[in-house]
Amino acid sequence: MTKRTFEKATFAGGCFWCMVKPFDQFEGIESVVSGYTGGHTKNPTYEEVCSETTGHFEAVQITFDPTVFSYEKILSIYWQQIDPTDPGGQFFDRGDSYRTAIFYHNEKQRELAEQSKVSLENSSKFSKAIATLILPAEEFYPAEDYHQDYYQKNPVHYMRYRKGSGREAFIQHHWGGEQ
Image (cartoon, rainbow, N blue to C red):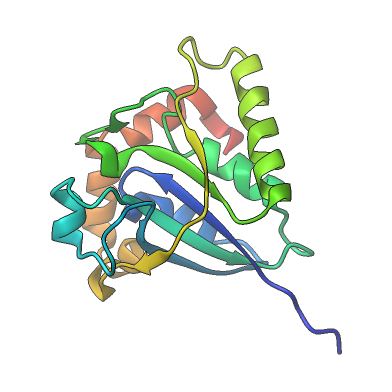
């Protein structure tokens, strides 16, 4: 039996509640954890991150088997979940903790992230510049338990939030049935 090797992919895409389900449904995705990264506070709480004093982004960390589900596919899904042109947050959620970023774990991920960003910029899908940051991965702190798998624990509130925030309409407008 061959030992499976897993990799990590880390993305900030605004509210982490909305960033779990799109990845959680595929074979080869081992886990999707909501959390915080990119800041200077050790073991931050949700309240601290929302206060905009920690430097952290709300993010998800995906553990995946690259032989089953490639990093390129994960990048493609990521771009289709966010407004990559908004440097001030995502949809209803404003502030640095809700900005978008790809946190690369190795040089190959950095190269693929940069290529995918250039490809999106050249696609003319958006009229404004792509504002999503590409940064080296830092310590990732899992969020509190009540934030994990929020779409499963609170499906009605999750869907109401996803629609009410404007995310659902944005995705439908820019990607339609492509996602």
